[in-house]
Image (cartoon, helix red, strand yellow):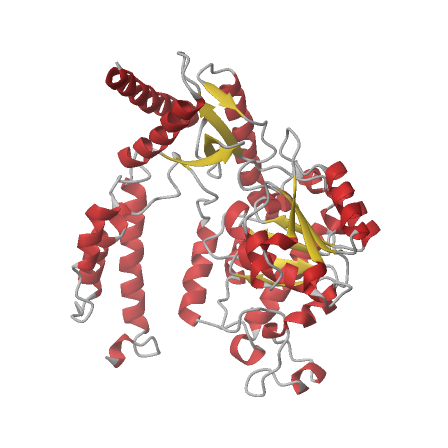
Length: 480
């Protein structure tokens, strides 16, 4: 079995095997005509469950043949222009080259003696991102697994920097449209979900700072401690950007940590035309960025950035066998000193390769394209009497609802929209998302593929209407 270990004697086998795998995927990408096959869990599970994992095939080609049946054939393909569901992006080729390199070398980014150049590359990218944000010379950060972990670490730092040790008094303020990881983080940090104060949003789904100010005042009057204000730069549903300057002013006034969740909107940092939409982010104490959303990177590639690198000490623990205290005096750069993780992939290499091949303007230009597409999609929806669209997009999401011509109950419209989404998914012709707005069922396009066109959007809208009308027609027959 040593023949399967990658080393100097098996390098040629590695080249052949990986090339064969890449060729299979390339063929699949080149010939896939829809984003999904429509397979159901009940249909696919027996195929996967029938594989005897205790009886190896012994051959890469045979394993790839089997992989076609259990995975590749029925995978959901984000590169397809009619995949418009979640915050999943098509990925750029330079990042895939980086992925191949990092997985083979297999550096672990916890200590210098495991990563060397990888440590310095990650640190350089953190400095580059912090500079794009405008956090200042004392800024620092670390790569993470994703936005949820980044938000958790930011709020951990906020908790430790708070002006009380009484956890019961701490409060976190965030908009009703913010990511669920804020509540989840509060729970994990021992604060409880009740520590999160939800602030309503305006008609553009941005945090209402007048209400935020009132809630902060009430909190202070009751002897509670405003631990953090979490502003969102690109909400998951609407792509809305909270008023960052106003929130920063209130954070300063009440001594609260300001965190900006820019997991989605971070693509604006590279945008040649829309960077101004993030004005005010430079006043944050911490920022979440997800390169695997609007920088077109493979999962996972995220980071948490802080204005004052010294605050990262709250995530530091020294182990004699890994990062003993003496290494600090010796100025040995151990990234584990900043991270919630120990063993950690060299995900920064993907972004490094992307910047070195495409440049920041190249990435930002792609994000601008999908934002332009969303604006055109909004105009299309606003002019279509079949649909009610919620808000003009700041980024690249569209939230809308099919409205039938004949008068029917809101509940029936809810069911028609939910049915349309499910029927479309089952057909495999397109993949869209759904959400609730003011308690009602809505549909959502998340546009992150520059290859998607207005014609694709129009075609998917026609498919949605067809499924919804069929559902309502059938129900009308049954009711009569």
